[in-house]
Image (cartoon, rainbow, N blue to C red):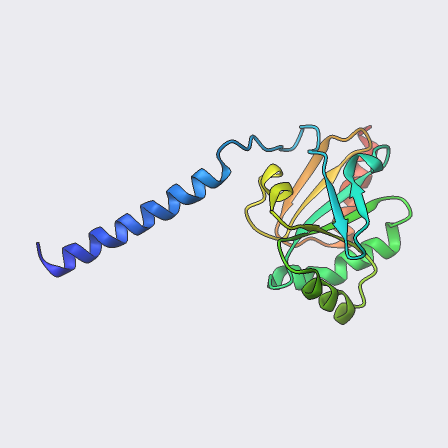
Length: 172
């Protein structure tokens, strides 16, 4: 067998191993999607206080999955802050950090003067149950706890408010 053919076989095996690893990582997690009841969770904030999703039942909740190293997440942060400032008294915004140290997120919050609530998904369990594969990903949950929207990629304050207004008009 020539050297080139051997390299092709090795690369193919590595690619197959990566796909197997990724597939096995999400096996056993059914996950939730638009139209399902939201997966309930309890996560800690920067101060170590716990927040449970079901505590916010009866109001619209926006879940945003985030990481400080994610450029689109960083670009989206001012929009989420604007949404929180304008609508925070009506709609709950929970930003869920995916597995980073609290110190890193704390530094990010200070640098961006953020006043939104950041929660820590240290083991990525919540992200897996929402079938999050990247970030940012945002979910809108209605007052009865049903996932009504999933936005993949960055969003804006205006888009979030518009989607919630439309859901309210449609009786959700």
